[in-house]
Length: 482
Image (cartoon, rainbow, N blue to C red):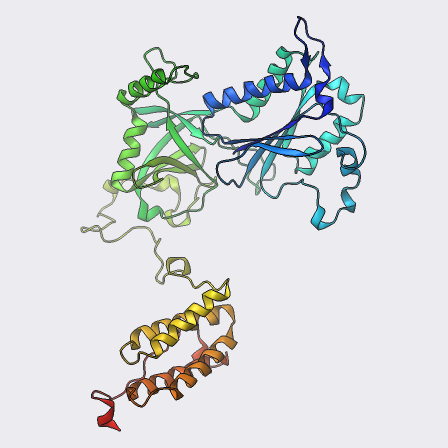
């Protein structure tokens, strides 16, 4: 989950802080020190986290933008708790919350899943002397309760600021390390982003379920059998390379680029089960079923980023004994060798799982999109172009005609069928004398069928009904038949 850091740079952040020593510190210096600690931790242990930095006072400015788009966010607000005065202040904004129009709505709650962490450059006693703490708690409540307020324990100093940001790191930015096991093979891995606990709504007393730190592979299955199942979340699985002393290679920031490259080269020479698994799944076209906890499973698979690069991914299923209905109970799945005969057939041409339906679903075909007028205009023009090339384009003409007919019936766009029918009748009257007589018959036939479908009541308006070409006896030139 990417992070937005919002730092308060208003005048109140320049208030001096009594710190032992000769150097004068302001609250903004303490905030910068804490953020530096956070960024260094992310650069070391959370390298895949994308972060944006915004500063604000009476105005705001984006200092460091994102490099891609996101659907979920974590927001870290760094402030001293001074709410300001007058119009535009937080106190005034919260008091006038119900008087705002839709075009001028309060930013919270965010229109996407998010967590709001507020880092106060003040201790709890200072905030309680004013109504600042109540207003900050109101912000968390407006964000659907997702977030937390952190305050400095004791006097304002660098040590206590580090302690406060350390608590934030423990809550939101601790990497998830696990052991991936398959039989006697194992590998230390990092799962990114960190899996969130899952709460099952059906339970009377919902208890959050946490993913195990020991991920055990229980079997393998063809990609065609698993298809594209519904999942809770998707995560990268990254191997953690260990040196002889057992320390993480590259765990700290390297001062020299050559040291970092040499560490990567050493890590690449060490055999790793995670790398072996990734390559095997990619070559064999299979996925690995992995146990995440009691009655909770997921799958490991290879996903291509580009033509030359792929990643080992892990998707989490819904907790339960039967997360995918077509597979049955996960605990009752067994190896092929236990079956009396090969369930995939001698020629590997069938599947034991009823995954493929008899008829193709809409997502398995090229869908018709008429969001913009140009899309509809293109489809109609395609029919007219083929109509002018009859009878050579008879098959293509009826294929496009049936595609438009099905889409119009699905959308309830019956007037379109009547309009295209009139256009085909008009095309029939505009045929030149040299045109093949079969063209006139096919156009009249297609127009009549569309007109019947436009009523919406006859059997010709059935969605599965297709308009077929009219059978004629024309085999020679048009002049021989006139």
